[in-house]
Image (tube, rainbow, N blue to C red; front, side, top):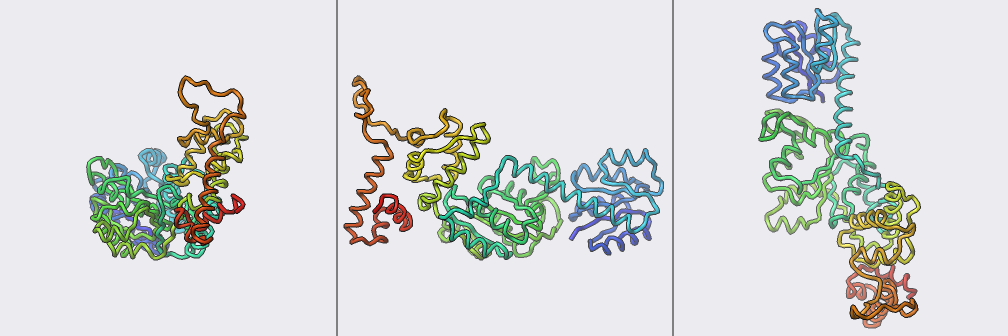
Length: 459
């Protein structure tokens, strides 16, 4: 619900405006002068100020200037029976959102109120989107189509339409934020914002201020009031990335907000109701963190209504080729190389790599390859070099010349790895009596990964 402050020295006018505001479905608080209004603004949160221009003592213009200094984004509407064009121009220059002349009809008043509130909502959303989404690209469709994430996609499609909290687990770079965006996009809150915040990126006090907002002067460097991520995400989804790194002291405050749906910005006594769906993510074992007294068990159970586990890229070999082509196509278009492509041998090298950095590492490698490669087709040798290995044979002592005849060269890296892998798979299957599950365990791969390699090597 929106909260509107009415400021007018005329008691009957204050009551009339309150009746109109409340008939629109909003909450209202009345003040008889600018000093009372300033006091109210310091005690609680408001979405709009509607003030008379001519009042004893400080005028509506004076109040407008005070509001701009302490709440720079709080919209203000001025109302007066003594308005002139010059007064209206002065008010708008000083930051008024709109200007109404008495007498006015109820429809005109409601129209102005709703327009100003809508404009403020659009301003907040656009500012957030510019800050958070500049330069990003939509990856949700690709994510949901990856064969290695079929079970994850099915889980997301079932969980997304609910309002239940979701905890996403996976290694660094596995795609946890993309999974969160999929949950949001398929939810009933898709028209609202998805607001991400990395809980490991900020120290405790700054993280608290980012989450819950703060007043001007709440701490060193807080030169103006600022909305928190909870308030920005109101009606949408808040994505708490790396939740396992949140300080214990802040975990208690977060739990309280999740239970009460009320946030209190730092440096204020305001209590702001919020309607936010929580999606969190971690690369940690939170059960172990609970045992080590680094994470609250009550917060864990509050966040973990549904858990989605993302398998690492090394267990999703079938996804590597799809992702590699997608990344090369995207970056090729950005740097003016739209025809950049990957050779079959290059894909094989990528599929043999362990990808400790998961999808993020593959994405970064593809970008470097597109930028640095001088060829239209990026080959295996290029990727082998980028990954820290050489596809050329050991040339021996430095004084020994390299054979000119290419037929005397050894096999490529991809060929050597493939032969070794095939031999080891055959040996392990023989030792385990063709038990695929046991062979996969001994080889240190998933059973799905083993079946993929059997098909690849024609076994």
